[in-house]
Length: 281
Image 1 (cartoon, helix red, strand yellow):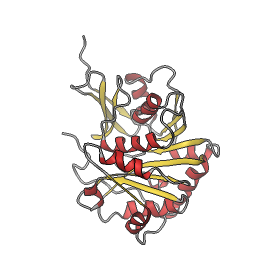
Image 2: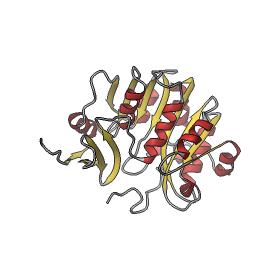
Image 3: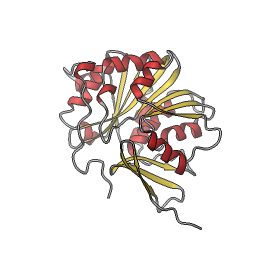
């Protein structure tokens, strides 16, 4: 039997590498310019290796009754970890994936093909432009995991962007995003203030060490017009190998403090991670 070998290719926005996991037969790590982007096990698409992906998965698991098919829009594709996860855990879901890097999409489609009948449609397009053209009330779930290199692009951080997300989501829909920041949390606080302009309910899932400012890391933001399943999310996050906390309500408003919502003209990307924050050995 042939051993899987690493694949490296220049894509539109850098150098992508697919590296096989020696411990799992058909599992792969995707990096772009050395930054880990995705991990996929083709034999077990419900396996989420990265902690932030597990936290996103907790939101995906609790937004509706187990197994119910959903209409989902993913902004950011990577190796399609979460679309594959939803296809496995919520069969029959209709999913659109928008990824700006056409070369990356082609690499993933070639080496990590989607199963037949997965209900996942790939689009090479800018996330904000696609969102602005998407029909109103067309999604139950909007998943944003967009990083240009290791930073969230500026045009996906503003009130105008959040309003477009709110327009595309149905009344009971949920927005969930992977963000990254460290103390003093100027970016994360501004995102909370921004999404509070549009959505009545917010929750933030992150490791206590990140929330206390001890290190730079990921934080998962969930936003909706209806109460979020905070208790269920807290139970799931606490049970992870690296336990996380769920902040909401008054505690989250205190954390946001006096941060101001972001306008398009003032928007900036999320901060550059410090050396080694998301590196791999």
